[in-house]
Amino acid sequence: MRHALNAARVLREGRGIGGPGSGMFATTGQKRAADRLLVGERYEDILNGPKIRDFAHLIEFGGDQDPDDPRVVIDRHALSVAHGRALTSEEYDSAPVNGFRRKDGSVSRRQYDHVVSLYRRAAELISARGGERVSAHQVQAVTWLVRQRLNQEAEQRRGPNRLDRGRNHARANSERAWNEFRTVYLPDLATCPGTGYQSAA
Image (cartoon, rainbow, N blue to C red; front, side, top):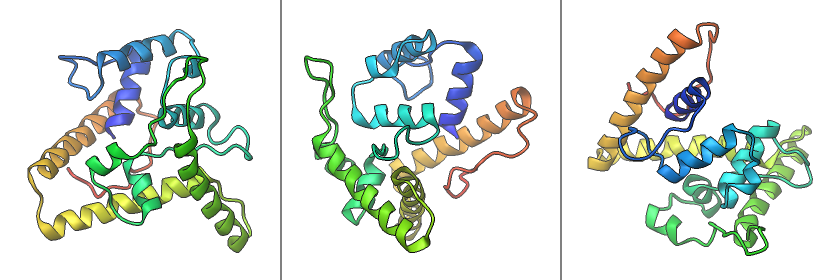
């Protein structure tokens, strides 16, 4: 809900939000990038990493522009699914999936695209078995939600640590803030997709 609330605020105010004192998990650089996007610059010219570029692509087109060129958002949870177990933040940070912008402006994606290819293959297998086309990004979205629920179940079994409690508190605040914002500024939005998380509020 935090991301939905932040996006709604940015659209309503017409400016990026982030940096010290903003109360957001967004840097000043991310705020500047949002400001550039809001005035019409292309995300391909602003965003460097394959994860955030693929995320922007999927938002822009509501899916893949070209089904033969699938885009998948490979974050820690998506990489955990591909790996077969929950990865720690340290393990994800050491994985070579971040990519970088080359001098010619292109972005390196070789290791990232290897993980995308796993999701693409899974989507092909599911499509063949079910008789209906499923996209790689759809497989990632569904399995991401399952991974989140498994993480929450593991947290409940072991008991939340300090970091877990902080995340749960932040998530509960985000849920409340989103519902208040939606009630005031989006009253016609009667129903809204859930996050896939168990409610923290």
